[in-house]
Length: 297
Image 1 (cartoon, rainbow, N blue to C red):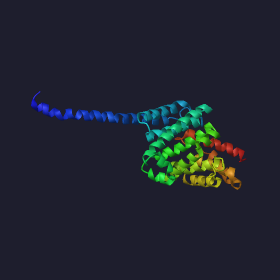
Image 2 (image 1 turned 180 degrees about the vertical axis):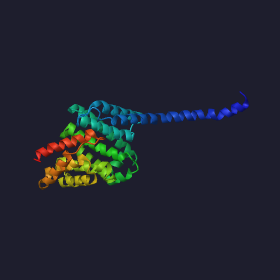
Image 3 (image 1 turned 90 degrees about the vertical axis):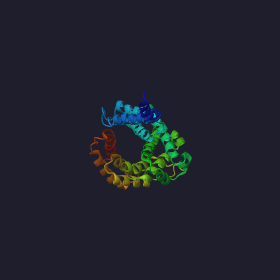
Image 4 (image 1 turned 180 degrees about the horizontal axis):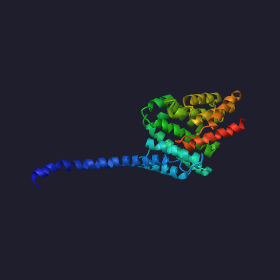
């Protein structure tokens, strides 16, 4: 090797350790991105083989596997976390047919959401500090984290369904109502239009269904339920769950508003599921027909 060749190769040789270090440091990120992409592709096929609001396990199980792989590559990753929560919700609601299957889906969701919120807590000085914040302060502190709203929304949904799957006693011991309320209020404080008025929809449903128990859930307010759901419909009238939940709340707590509720249910029952949310939309449309029959409409 002549001297000029040796000199020309020295920068390359010196750069090899850096290149190797860069490759090793980016490998988990690449694996994580690929796994999330796998999950997304499978989630997009979740309605394949479905009959109305009942889906088959294959596509959603593949989506769950992709998101789980992403979390294994980088534990606590927020995008993988909220997408896994969304996929677990789909499996528990539209695929699972037994209590055990629902408990498995929402039980895993409970682990995912609390780990993700622990990760978000690190952004504001720790979980204890986050838990001491008001919903408005928490939303403001996490305003620069684009995944935060999804984590809280799907986390609240999962906690609520976990309570349904495991029963009232377990829900009371875990403080499910308080968790759903807090996470929903954080979503609402961040953006009331987020996910087609997701915060209003969530809180409206909570105040509709939660039992009012002195010293435990004394904050439950049926008037507030209707107020939230009216806002949800005003913001996103196309969302079938906004319509269904408002009609249901009116039938339960506003007898004078029965004609309004029946009119909402008739409109909803006449709708067709959207192509993007065929399974999810089929469920509230079917429920609207059942409620309409009970209401004598």
